[in-house]
Image (cartoon, rainbow, N blue to C red; front, side, top):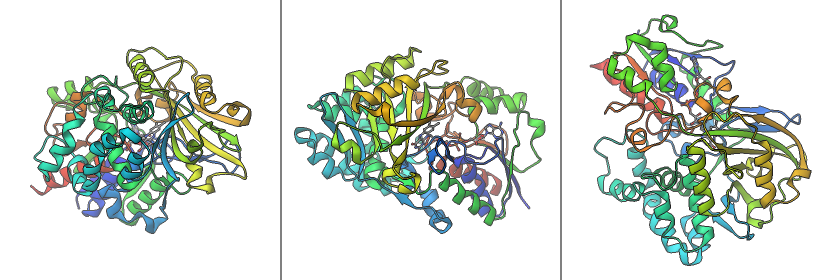
Length: 471
Ligand SMILES: Cc1cc2nc3c(=O)[nH]c(=O)nc-3n(C[C@H](O)[C@H](O)[C@H](O)COP(=O)(O)OP(=O)(O)OC[C@H]3O[C@@H](n4cnc5c(N)ncnc54)[C@H](O)[C@@H]3O)c2cc1C
């Protein structure tokens, strides 16, 4: 029987293991932590019964993931839920950019800027299910839908700052800026529109949904599926050296590229080793979970109905702060993302005490404490927030890699999304999952299509491995 090992049990490791098991491979997944899940775990804490997402919280890329959809995870209890509004970006004026599920509703709320929003998203959202085939895998291959892909792809090469100039109102410009900032890059650089357009289109198609009971429910359903297919899961097993790897016909690493290079050492061909060792990381995240009595007292009424709230002021301020963290400078008022998953999923709250998720964009490896900066940024748009805090749980940028060594220096995207890494993946090659050794592959979020809880990196890498085995 063909045997397989997967190192690392994040969503991509689980997806790789499931794909191998579905093909009849005898697969074992090895995970360093006590539980699988990587960046998609949840925990109960601060107040007994309150449910927080450790990392990933909002899932526009997972809901329609062809891999996840094909597994019918609802059988194992996964339920997607939406807040009334997907995302709100409030400004000091009290106004806000408002992202609705529908392109039309969003455009209608934007007044003179509605036409620009429609031009950016209407066509790609209408054909998103076709586009998924092309954007949820390596970009450097002939697309299944070349004309649709060309239409979607053309604006992605633009700097987000150039797209922002098409908007006339500060609210629309800021809404776009907050979504584009998910790329963790200076917004005046080429291709910084790509991630914003991708998340934006996926969100309009499927919603910025959350998993009932916490993001960990996605992982629980994946783990059950793997075990049901005969796969084995071993936790508390950290692989640091190639000698620890069990003999197997295929081995897939759900790890950051430099860790793979360290583990495989001189077994890697020189060119592959050099590529992986030179892999570049992006800025970091500083995470704070809050228990909040009565929720966040937002000034803007729409923010009370939104699953996600982006805090960073107008586009120019967001752009300046994203540039600062890129060059290693901590801004006074960093870009902050706030998650109010409980609005979609009340099971996460205890009475009127609600779990509020947040993180700030900070420099890679930031050694300071950004808790106060996050609270101050929330207070700016929700005066009185501080008085409602019942408790906090902090995962600093320095602590994040101890929690999950894939998040080097707090880089939650598993690598800088600069043009070369965005287009090629972990190294410059047309085979982004290959490690240049027969039977060995990398399948983490450093590979296409990149970060989020969609599992597509793992599924794609495992398909490559299976194809090579059949040759
Ligand atoms: C604060 C934060 C917020 C985020 N928000 C979102 C969000 O809202 N929506 C979204 O879609 N995504 C979000 N993400 C990103 C998302 O979590 C990641 O893109 C995703 O988890 C990547 O999956 P992965 O399988 O590639 O790797 P990971 O989830 O990083 O999993 C890798 C696994 O490998 C294990 N491992 C590492 N080294 C070894 C070793 N040597 N031996 C054995 N095991 C090892 C780790 O313990 C871990 O379990 C967020 C991440 C963070 C940190």
